[in-house]
Image 1: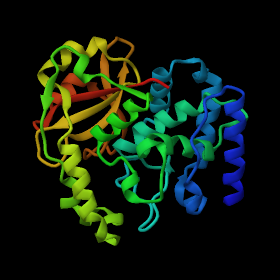
Image 2: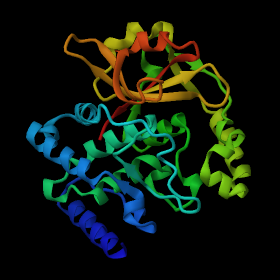
Image 3: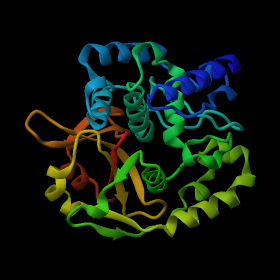
Image 4: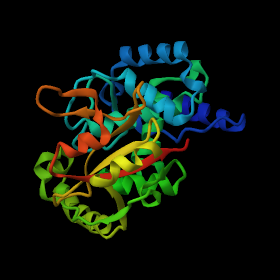
Length: 301
């Protein structure tokens, strides 16, 4: 794996010299490849479809939505971010996705299409997962280098110019208040926290910092009015009324053939439990009393 890492680092340096968008330095080599990447056959099928349908020529949002549509029907699988008890590393599992890994896999694959077809490898995709998933785009091998809460993820990726946070600029925006404590309170559900209880105190400190963030959202009663302003591939975070986190779910915007803005996501609902193209976004929000509204992140690169 170390040899593979050196090859990837050399590739990234060469691409930077020729003006192609550089991928970050990889850290996935800390674990066996079969641990951090699952679904190679599906990856190869996506590559072929991307070439056949010309995804690389599309804007990044349309690309992201195209990947998301190609993943429709993928089974829902909980805790696909948790792959090891001691070592934190970027990972991809195309055989099963939760709501977070669905949007980040779609975005990482879309970004990878900036590279020539012969350079689109699982290792390169993992490097784009690292760019997206970790604070400042770098996995240190420590759990707290990961952006665990969606509003923190959006703020970090916005600061780095990768995604634009839109909610505050949209008509009807309002402050959203909540208390982040889901992970420290529910630490038994997170294998890394179970195995490393020393992290609970710094996790609570991180949660306090995120709780103090200024978060704006579009209340769900006002979402129908702003749907025309949303684009395919926009990242839609569902804000919640319940204590624990600002957001409880996430997916992608996808406009159908009739022009209706729908919610595409990895659903854990009984009878679905798969990546699905759901109702009109505002109708989806209305179905759940706990949903408060949305935040929006627009991919830029």
